Amino acid sequence: MTHYEFRVQGRLTEEARSAIGDLRITEVPPETVIDGEVLDESHLHGIIVQLQALGITVVSAHPIPE
Image 1 (cartoon, rainbow, N blue to C red):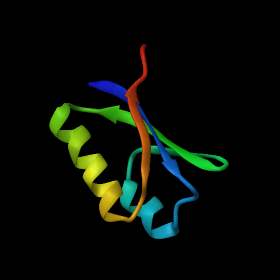
Image 2: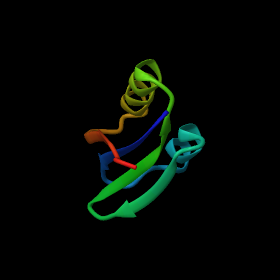
Image 3: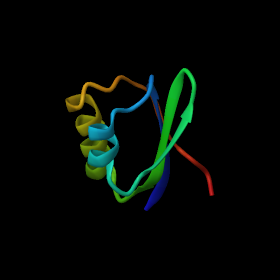
Image 4: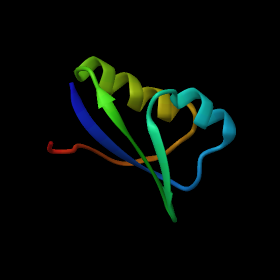
């Protein structure tokens, strides 16, 4: 498991916040930071696809060193 940080454009809707689940959401205008544990590469890809399906633009995604 690896801790990841995703930076996305703008603020999240309530629908998006609900869909994200266990990940922590922090607003840092003009972006939103989403972070949490990612199990493997497949899980990482699934999170990115889910964000895109919600109409969220991913600015960056990177692992956070422990």
